[in-house]
Amino acid sequence: MAVFQALIEPLHYGFMQRSLVVALLVGLVCAIVGSYLLVQRMALLGDAISHSVMPGLAIAFILNINIFVGAFVAGILSTLLIAWIRVRSPLKEDAAMGIVFSSFFALGITLITRIQKQNKIDLNHFLFGNILSVTPRDVIDTAIIVAIVVGVVLLLYKELLFYTFDPLGAQAAGLPVNLLNFGLMVLIALATVASMKVVGVILVLALLIIPGATAYLLVRRLYQVMALGSVIAITASISGMYLSYFYDLPSGPAIVLVTAAAFTLALLFSPRYGVWVKSQNTALPALLQEIRQLLR
Amino acid sequence: MNYSHEFAQSLPHLAATGRNTCADLPPLQVVGLTVDYGKATALRDIHLTLQPGRLSGVFGPNGAGKSTLVKAMLGLVSATGSVVWGDRPLAEQLDRVAYVPQRNQVDWLYPATVWDVVMMGRVRKTGLFRRFSATSRQVARAALARVGIDHLRDRPIGELSGGQQQRVFLARALAQEADFFCFDEPFVGVDQKTQAVLFDVFQELTQSGKLVLLVNHDLGESITHFDDLILLNTELVASGPRSWVLTQNNLYRAYGGQVSFFREAA
Image (cartoon, rainbow over all chains, first blue to last red; front, side, top):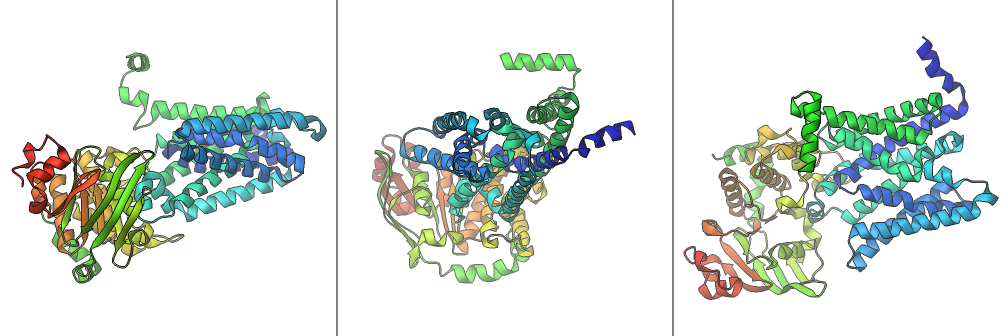
């Protein structure tokens, strides 16, 4: 009963209700979209897009428009630039991403630092999130983004499955692969934008990748990865929020650390890939064996 | 083992339409196809004709542009020249094409089952925003049975052998119910049984009047399965019926010095 009371207590505060709802929604949307990054081996792209939204945020503040819109435009612009550099120069995609996202990030930090004072905003809130400042308006915006992303994934599931598994085969079958690819970029940008208040741009990558990666160790079909990843992410969001409330931890990092713990458990105990399960030995020899293999 | 009987039974609409309509498929014309990668030319001015009902193989040394030829024909790499099938460009008729890339071009650790991959063959026919129909599932089941892996249906693709993976791809191609089939190096790293299944299916497809094009690398004795050959070395060396293409002179122009093991096959 005391535990129950303790769990109910934070819900008396409006800001806590709002932040829990937003954390939950963001966990869901990031796990779904991140699964596509995971299976395409493009984790870095999530990092690139999330860093690239910064100048969009700043410009939105300057022009006094919705920051979600500004961030979204900047995120899309960065993916187009990455693609353009890759096509127009002998550079590979990873180099193109590194160039674009660090430049956008630098521009964003510069702009936000300049306008910080007169707009009463704090650079740190963009970098690391500030979930307790979530407004009712933010809750609605986030819910809209989640609805769009989930809707698109449901409608295009079979096409995106084909495209992300075998892009050439999908193109040869006449699927609109460029459109699908651009659609994926839009989804990633949307998920990133939705996550800013919860974890900030630096830790978005964790929410995109870790829940899906954890699920990937446990289940074997894409929709299962998405579903289990969502459950893991939502659990982590809620427990992270409570941890941050009771132990006075920063909430974004607390959520990420819970997902990391879940991943560690899956890595050790997954029936298929589990380090612990595979070795059949007691813990210590198993650990020594792993270390020996790493050093070999 | 022969699955063709079951296959036809379980697929009444295929059995009914297959032979009749496909006999009328037009040949496919490649005219002046050229592919440049930066400054290097991968393919230069290729002219050839693919005949329906004949198993055609693209042969040539490493780097001859074999895979590039198929990709350029399908518009997967940018090329100049034209590829016409019937009265329209092939690129406008991709819904009638089944293309199977090299097995190592996809990530087999992708979280998908055999069934998921075979159903990809039905995505285009199903259309955007729609769910797979009962017919589609029926076609996919028949395709799995045809290549002898219906028992692996729910297996994750990462747990399959190379031969089984290739048969998954073959089943996906069959599920597409295409008229033009392209396979890029389907025999690499597969077992004897899979090779037999592949040639069986190719023979069935050609007998029902389809266009079937394989890129092949390793020749050996299997070359006798092919009706037509396309001998390539950046430029077209020769194309046409096997016995006509496999001359000492052509092989020398394609492969240079390393021709001796082809001679018997000719």
